[in-house]
Amino acid sequence: MFISDAIKYVGCDDDDLDLFEGQLVLEHGVSYNSYVILDEKIAIFDAVDDRCTEQYLANLAEALGNRQPDYLIVQHMEPDHSGSLGAVLNAYPNVTIVSGALAFNMMKQFAVPTEGHEKLVIKEGDTLSLGAHTLQFIAAPMVHWPEVMMSYEQSEKVLFCADAFGKFGSLSYDDPEGWTCEARRYYFNIVGRYGAQVQALLKKAAGLEITKLLPLHGPVLDEDLGKYIKLYDTWSSYEPEESGILVVCASIHGNTLAAAEELVEMLKAVTDTKVKLVDITREDWAETVEDAFRYDRMICCACTYDTGLFPPMHSFIHHLASKGFCKRKIGLVENGSWAPKAGSIMKAMFEEMENIEIVAPMVTIKSSLTDDNRIAMKALANAMK
Ligand SMILES: Cc1cc2nc3c(=O)[nH]c(=O)nc-3n(C[C@H](O)[C@H](O)[C@H](O)COP(=O)(O)O)c2cc1C
Ligand SMILES: [Fe+2]
Ligand SMILES: [Fe+2]
Image (cartoon, rainbow, N blue to C red):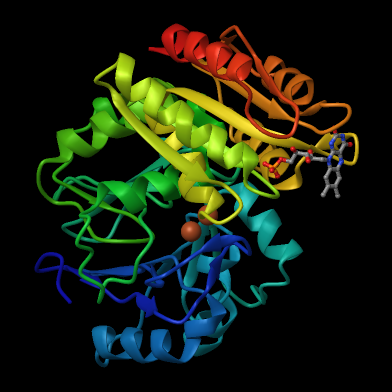
């Protein structure tokens, strides 16, 4: 597949992978993107997951024809891209490895067989000429690993942007939801914690004229780039993308869920804003993390469990904390039959995060809803609207 006359896509679709990074559910696979620039010199950008090594070597051989690659540019050492590096190095013994110092250290850690290969250690601002094409290297530390180095090709004005602007779903899957939904789930669950570092990258990118973004997962972005960059700006500054109230519920026997359903009706009665109910015991938690960042308000409803918080809610809020959740308005509903504690635990977890406003009243249900609970829930609905 040609991206331009000189740039070819050589990556692989992994349609069968069920969990990305060991925990993120994939329904339509993922692509491990890799590219080559064919000029006087040939450069390969990254490799793929070891699951696809055979296919990848075949793609490379076809793209290269009877030529040998000169440079293997390693932008990111996570195994979904570095898993097949060893096989590429074996197949092309004369290729020079081009990467940052941190990535070369990681190659040792991951036991990549680099012996016998020339190594070119590059840093921010360095350039490498391939002939008509010139690469300019851009450090993107913690987007989303420390060693990440992106490459800007000056003549075609394309940015090889590593894991930034990635999306779940293999390239053979024509996503009816378009780019944003699965790119957002990808962003918040993988890169989310590193908003400040993404902001720094966007500042560097603003100084470059960019015609195409070539990420390591998902489609090449070659039109309407302002839209994608604006979304990344919103996401990485932790601003809500939309006005809306997400109601997240974790219930054992259904009473807390019934309360959440009534609360949703109460919210709808007092506001036109979007209200979305999620049963976190069944829904994909990563999709719910995505929604929590997407909207400006959230109400968490959960029951007490073994003097603690019911684990599906505990795990969800833990995921939010790990991804740097902040700047949101939160309402709380707890349930417990003898010593309710879910609310105070959720409150303490949210209070650890930055710029979280806990909205009063917190509603305490003792088993099933009472009329007093309904009055409190109406007050909460009004306070959240
Ligand atoms: C294994 C287990 C542990 C529980 N631990 C507590 C507890 O420590 N304190 C409490 O008040 N209720 C506890 N409960 C009771 C539930 O929190 C309570 O019945 C609540 O109303 C359940 O709401 P639900 O109908 O939404 O599941 C526990 C329930 C179960 C099944
Ligand atoms: Fe990665
Ligand atoms: Fe990746």
